[in-house]
Image 1 (cartoon, rainbow, N blue to C red):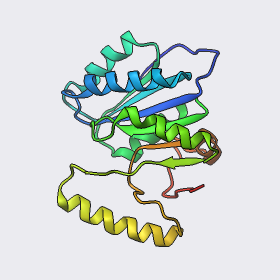
Image 2: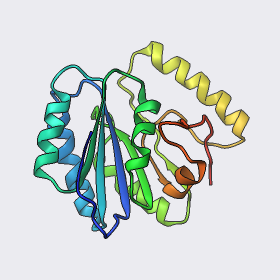
Image 3: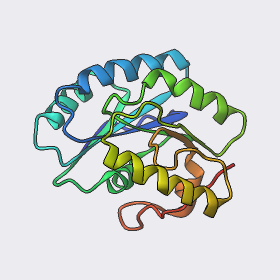
Amino acid sequence: MTQGTLDLALPEISVLITCYFEEKSIDEFYTQLASAMKSLDRSYEIVFVNDGSTDGTFQKLESIYSKDPSVYAIIDLFRNSGQTAAQTAAFEHLRGECLVVMDSDLQLDPSEIKYLMNKYDDGYDIVSGCRRNRKDALMRIIPSRIANIIMRKISRSNLKDFGCTFKAMRMALIRGGGYGPFKPWLAVDVIA
């Protein structure tokens, strides 16, 4: 892991990005993300997690880190551990009041972070995106739709896409749960 120097002024937003075999697209994603975050005119930090990619993803992240002081940390997992584990590995390094989570695979548009933040500013504890026009194989989409139907019934909510990794949430929820490498994320969604 590479981590920046501690800044006494804590950022308002921590952006957590998980990466898996993104060597070819991470530079474009980062450019879009940095532009989106700057347009919000709020303090922020970016934490990248390389989830065991064996291509040049981590080297690209190191290059981004060396050029942008807003990139607070990059974490390199020695093997692919899955998205939840990758996110959990980063929790103890996040300093912001609001956590924005997304993948780096360019299926989600960083410029849409402003929509998450608009709803977050309305007082919601968790705001979740919804994937439209998914570029996944049908064998991933069908089980996802079934799981979403089941989760809606169990949670008695109308959340459309429980599996979407495009979220904004209050870090107090994460910190309050004590999540981190020794207490992984529990499979519970809180819906405001």
